[in-house]
Image (cartoon, rainbow, N blue to C red; front, side, top):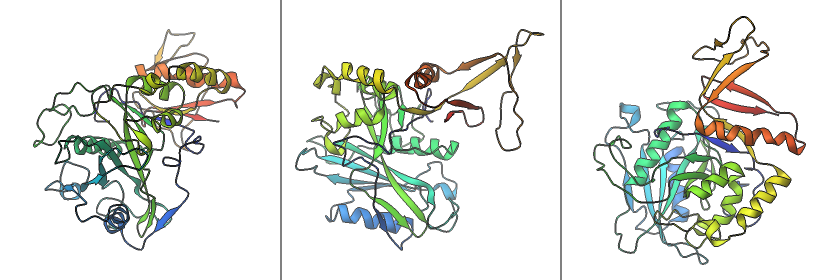
Length: 364
């Protein structure tokens, strides 16, 4: 990730989203299109935004990544959305172009088949509340989406519905340490929206294009308390609460000035979550982290493991009686939570440590 301290986590409730989540539940329908990437995405957006003023703006680097450019996205298009009848929250709707195969000629992504993911299989979206005096959409979400996309390109790790992304800084804080676009000037921020979760975009259906399938994953900014319980309980449960929050609504709009959490609106929510953890356990099934290991033997105090370990079909495995494991701080905090699944009668879990992919995967 372009931001230090990132831990990418999957919540295995992505196929079991609870009640009241019609907007963010996984898509059961797809739009079938004979078009390739750019045309297919444009066509589905035109269905949602038929107004002549949309797209309101288009951000595109002068030199694309397939022509030696630094930014991973070909375009980020921004649309003006007036909200829904239930939650009239005017907002800017940012949509990326570039994580999926836009051109179908192999310049960025290899074609894998019509029924296979197009490129990485998704594009990112972001909904930012529009200030009443704003006439132009802010540019910092474009930088944020490029940062997230750069992480996907660099690591090959795909984002999924109900993932959460620790950021540990205001999302709209843009400066030299965050932005690789020299046009962006430093933007100090006192926002409390410091982390993100991932949901299905509430309006954009999945696409079945000539270059493969494309899902639209929406990035949602959250407060520290909401992030904490998304991490220690389940992301989908926090999403259910955000959908009835008057500042986010069922479109899950990010209000960068929001300070009132879902727990402020429902003081009993923490007790309800603890009760559910006691009875159901947690819903984590994957943590991306940095791992170091040392084997403890009778002959020597410790034997350090290699700096990089690659796991594939040809690798040999051996049992170790005693191993000392070092995790980064975020993963170390999460590991006991994941292991507690054993206390709820779930199948025994084996954990595979992958140094090359920096991942900790549970194999039930």
